[in-house]
Length: 260
Ligand code: PGA
Image (cartoon, rainbow, N blue to C red):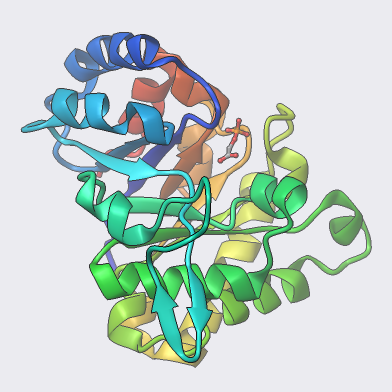
């Protein structure tokens, strides 16, 4: 089953708006003719409007890095007295197609849980915003032989109560926590083992038609030097790129490696 690779840049808490514009100005000519892989950038909320104008009419899609939603009395709330928060409805309104949810940095530093991510995922579908759902084990969990059980639990919980036809539009990002920003990458075999397990779980939960189309990105120190071998694995369908997405040439080289 041929899935189109999807490479997304997670700019994290980096780049002033002018710097985001400069990075795009460098990136656009490098990737403008690529039409056999999907590309997205995820700036801070504050740069979204500027980036949206710059990517209009190009092959670069736009995403946010988080969203806020709560469920009250069985209803998903997308606005209200939640100072400092931004809902999926607002992110969609700002022109984004994507939002990263449940990134390990949010789990680690901001107390996010699988249950909370599930609420956010369902709120995204309510407004037609597509989630990039992050899962992955810590070093302690890997060393304890718990990798597959941790990821299984995270995927099940994050996708709980979602119909198969909605899950089709989701992207799962497998990001081993020990590989994020550390320069230490999972080997292609380590990554494929987990990606294959995620695909098998999607098959069990949602059936073949969904499992065959959901793209599973790898994230964690993906860079030009290791992208090709990671992307050659049968169940790795792109990358969620942090550090290397802040350099136009490196990000473009990863996208090049992801071409169909
Ligand atoms: P990294 O980050 O590429 O800098 O390891 C990936 C991510 O956190 O999404």
